[in-house]
View 1 (cartoon, helix red, strand yellow):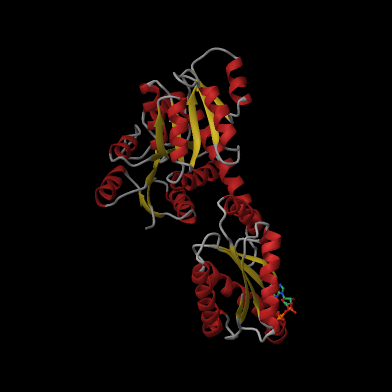
View 2: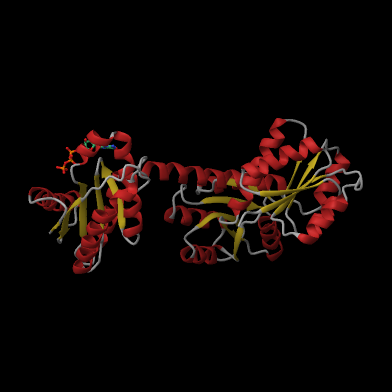
Length: 411
Ligand SMILES: Nc1nc2c(ncn2[C@@H]2O[C@H](COP(=O)(O)OP(=O)(O)OP(=O)(O)O)[C@@H](O)[C@H]2O)c(=O)[nH]1
């Protein structure tokens, strides 16, 4: 369901710009030109968040802000200019952020905030602090920005939670805690997880200037001194989440085939190597199949390279669906592979035969020109634990399939 945003703004041009930004980043948007109109809309709708002008004709003292806050709508305040008095008033409310409408950057900033809020719903943050009041305060700041929050009383508890919840992205840790303090927790987390996987923000009330360096040397990404300003807290936190997200995007691009969006050769080799190691230890026999489109060159020659690409993309979609439980990849050109790790070999063979048959029947659906094609498949099920060697065995069988008439599975 599309998330809905309420824009409370009496200047039509500004409201239109805000609505345009909201729609661009995936929201539905309602505009209220006054507090009265806003109240009516709030009574009839569920809003994911609100962007609120501080001064309105029927709300000259910022009365629209408590209105959205009381309705439990996460609120971003936009103001024409912010003097100290307005800032103090605004900061008293548990708002998400305030933005001054002074320049173009303000709208870029708003766009970023609106993008972050739905993303934060999927980001897990673990707060480790033995002080209940500080922990509650940090958790409420996090919840306001829609993060998923987990709590630990000390370092030992934090590690246990991390072991059970491997997708925690950020750990915010106090230093002075019983059982295991913050910098010990940092170095233990870094022993287990890399900087690419998890960000750590250290916090402490200590005056010692060495503490921040100690935190950073033990693997923390950032440090905050208590008491901290909530704006600074949010800025540092979102910078760290952005960094993790960028790394994940780069990693995904590096592991994905650009044309078919299937995992690529590099990812296939890395993942199978890890699995084969475990299979070897457990004395289990791995299975692997190689697939090659029959006479693909003549498809390109007859229908053109773009049609060939369409065929590859359609086939890749079938691989992703048909072999959802396994690791399917495009190795290059018109060659694909699926790794099955520990699966009953007879079941795999039935599945492969089913796939071959499915492609033979349905391949015309993949392209505008209704190009019909078939697959040759080579299958290896052997106690071989080097991926190159296992691929070589499957390739020998694939060659056999090609040599003996194509459109078949050889084992
Ligand atoms: N459209 C398209 N063609 C590609 C791509 N990568 C490789 N090819 C083509 O795939 C064809 C592979 O041809 P061959 O290796 O001769 O094999 P084949 O024609 O499939 O014949 P058999 O494998 O013997 O059945 C070549 O014409 C390549 O140019 C791609 O990304 N897109």
